[in-house]
Amino acid sequence: RQRQMCIRDRTQAKLQELIDVSKDNERLFQACKTCLIELIEGRDINALATSIERILGEAFSVHAHHLFLFEDREVGASPDLTRIDQSELSRQMGSLFTASAPWLGAIRPDEAKTIFPNAKRMASAAIVPIRRNKQLIGLFCLGSAEGNHFHAQLSTHFLELLSDVIAWITPREDTVNS
Image (cartoon, rainbow, N blue to C red; front, side):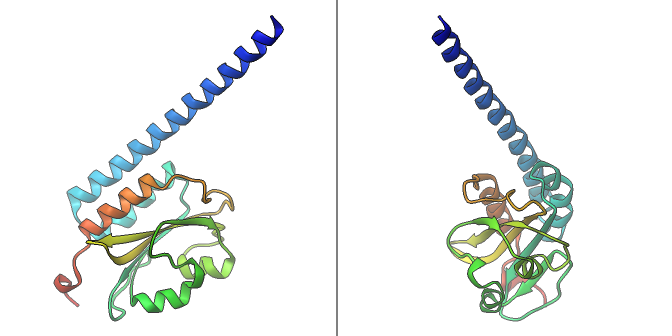
């Protein structure tokens, strides 16, 4: 009888854990959906920073963000958007530069300064490639002051979806006025 109670308690604890994960996923999905709708309705890459700060900051516990868009030459930048040559950013970021899949993990202070030039004390990051027609056009970076907030076991589905929308609303280089 005591064994049955122990099994029942473990089953209830596991069920509660699954319910909590489901509720957290629903909260993240709603935040992502709100951000996506705003991006699509505005179709404005410059509105991205405002949406991230307001929506993703709370939902994903993001303390910093930066968007790098690749262009042959550096052109005007804003605090959260840098237009830069891909090889130059690769040189600056070193092993953190990712072209194939999102990278999540702890970062050193010197890496944080490169990725988040206007933020203080970021300890972990999510670096998500932005692709259009299989071509790398930029990186979408999110940072947290918590060292273990972004880690390799974290699902990247929502971040990759945001990256896809960013690629969709980002003007093609041949349509950008310099």
